[in-house]
Length: 89
Image 1: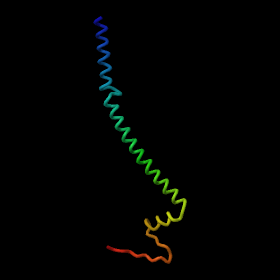
Image 2: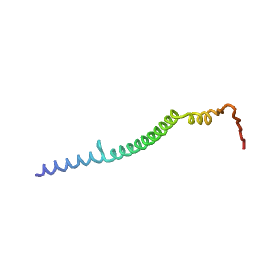
Image 3: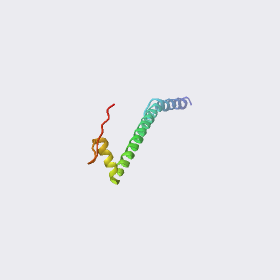
Image 4: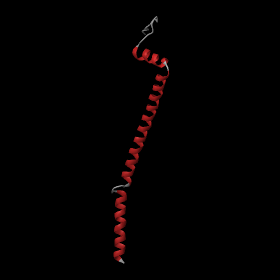
């Protein structure tokens, strides 16, 4: 009877060790969960960025207005017979 109790106690100690310290422990699962949360947040940010870029691509494919706007804003281009005023403050 004492040997069975000793074996049971040893098994309980072994399983408790694995739960708290060993592979797949509570602390390791918590660390994995935090890492997963960070990765999910990064994936969501990248998904939103991709959606914005996709919308911009569709806009550029759709019409000349978007191309003209980008040329004016990014390249400083103006149309023919158009006067450019640069205001300094």
